[in-house]
Length: 303
Image 1 (cartoon, rainbow, N blue to C red):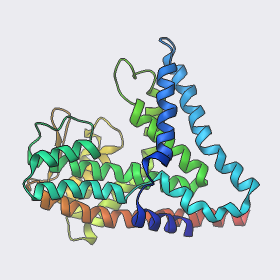
Image 2 (cartoon, rainbow, N blue to C red):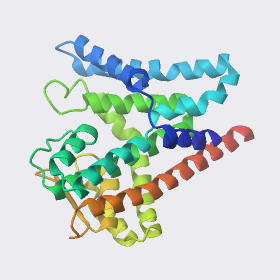
Image 3 (spheres, rainbow, N blue to C red):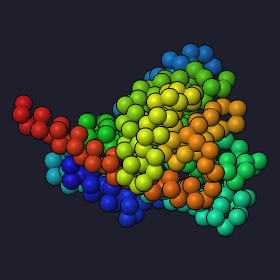
């Protein structure tokens, strides 16, 4: 319980460790190596094995550490911190907001592409840039905060690190292209499964947070329930539609999806509202994870 709170404080005060020592860099190296070694045939089978092996490699050390060195539990907040990131997500969205507020659309597009989205941004309007930043903020509340913290609450460090590896594998391999369709299918499907309940919980917490910050919680619930399936991802639509309803805006990706929560304009002001909504949602996520961890501890003590 205390571990989660301390890890969150570390994140808020210091953010992510430098890239040269960030464990996700090591995960990326493993996945790039797998891409190089992947055969031209039986790529799905290879992808299953390589991703499963990576999940074991990055989670097993924490099992051994606690068995061999029980006092290492004091380091658990520090070891948990690298698997989630809220401060950096918030800062990236805030940077886009500041660029839009200064009417510097080229810089807002650059920051959006550099930190938040993989889609081309060169032709996006100011409203589309604002919408994309809000979408990324809402979606990443699941991937970057809720899912890893809940994984830790349920299964400790091994589960949290395994989740982060699977999520990284999906981000690098989960594309429907000739190169990755078979190679990354296992990672993508596993990531969808692991995020199924965290995404839904986060969507409902966004709606609850909307009531708390004076936004439209009822519309957040209605939009989420009606439109969560409008995205290709089975999970992202839950949080993005909840945010659209809470803010009273339409979040749209050209030719892909449209989540209609209202006709309010999208601007830097809307991003500021979304950040306030996300801050309260993040606090609720942390409290939920602490509650789950406390429940798990009570169950273990009763055995």
